[in-house]
Image 1 (cartoon, rainbow, N blue to C red):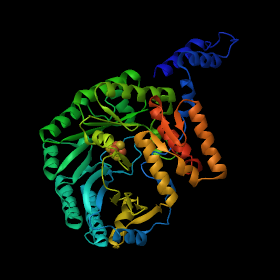
Image 2 (cartoon, helix red, strand yellow):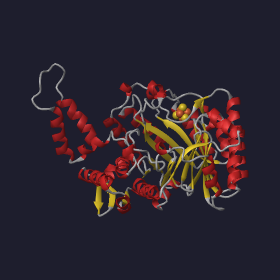
Image 3 (cartoon, rainbow, N blue to C red):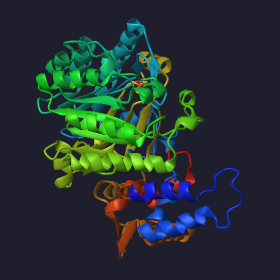
Image 4 (cartoon, rainbow, N blue to C red):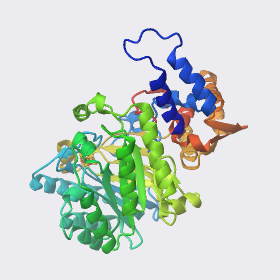
Amino acid sequence: MIEIKLLKYLRRRLTPKMGSGSCEIDPDQQVARLIAHFCGMKKQWLKYLNQQAPRYTSYPSALRFDDSVDAALYAEKLRAVDLYEPLSIYVHIPFCRQLCWYCGCNMRVENSYDRVRTYVDALLDEIRLVGGAMGGKGRIATVHFGGGTPNMLVADDLACILDAIEREFGLTDDARLAIELDPRLIRKGDVQLLADIGFQRMSIGVQDFDVGVQWKINRVQRFEMVAACVRDMRCAGVDDISFDLLYGLPKQTLHSFRETIDKTISLAPDRVAVFGYAHLPLVIPRQRMICDDDLPDLEMRADLAALADERLVAAGYEQIGFDHYAKPDNALSVAQREDRLHRNFQGYTDDIAKTTIGLGASAIGFVHGAYAQNEKDIGDYQRRIAARSLPIVKGVIRTKRDERCAEIISHLLCKFETDLADIFELTSGAEQTRIRQALEQLEQDGVIRRRDDIVCINERARSLCRVVAASIDPYAHATATFASAV
Ligand code: SF4
């Protein structure tokens, strides 16, 4: 962070003011020289800030999904699930009360609960269809309700969905139930009801506590409202509270974000995820409501991420991977220490299940080497369910090479170290040359160090780990529509 601040300061001091005449020395060259002098090689990292990279919540990424996976193939995979195979269930609730302009999720603003109820009926039918295909096999380790806004559903409907899951898949007492919550929709008594149903993990979308920033993203929620939710959760015995924060939002400053982080720390959530806002207005039209000129530049994004990292770590949180933080006694920290951390669609997780069943519009499952995604459009999803068909529209079957790449990249993202021997064995010709050159450059720039085929990401460069992963990923170079890596 110091280097980036210094860069900005120097650029301001050295850039001639408008109308002040010509400058004999190129200010950028001066900046580069001075940065090199003060900061060693860190200036060389600036070029990576804007590099695009997948988020690696699946491998290959969803951009590679096609119609090679359909309902019939998915049903075959479901039938092959083992009797006691741990299962992770993801339930997508695609409704929200209001549109947040930064949102990249599959959601619809919905004011009619009748239409929400119709969707719940379709979900119940889908649970029966999937359960029927699996024939009672598998054992649930986790159930996660995401969205959208799962607390758009009344507690009775959430309980009804869980009952159906229990009937079809055999929900056991040690299964962990998690739910994402919008604090603006939480009324007195709601949290206790959710805890009574069995949710022990609750995640709140905070993003930023600064009201000016909140207006710019169309999501105004007072700090006191979030604080009251957290109090209710603690009173209800919820033992895993998680906050999602976003940096790179319009009008965010170091000062405003510092206050957001400090307010977060004052509420002591068990986990904090700090994501970078991915501004892709050409792909996500609703993001056009956000004015480009209000967005922090790349250097400021890096500053904001570094600020969150410094303050959360100083407050006693452990850094989990590149964008999560957790208290030392939280399950995520324990999983990291015990080498059980991995990534799935929810980001870093301690979930033991390798098999994910996705339920609801746009949900993605992963069963026996195949990713399968449900129809995204809510109406089409409901029609397919009404026709008694699994609503799968696309996916991808992992090849042996994909399996190895996935493991190597997962090690890199979870442990910041990986063995590339297999990558070199699996690639050849121009592809291998490109990977070797990219690694040489990263090593020269001080991002990684290498010992034979073992690659380690240097501690201060961990925020660049998606860049390193993309450099060894054979697919990342074929596609260029990811968000920037920092
Ligand atoms: S509440 Fe979440 S899912 Fe809904 S619009 Fe806002 S960011 Fe998107």
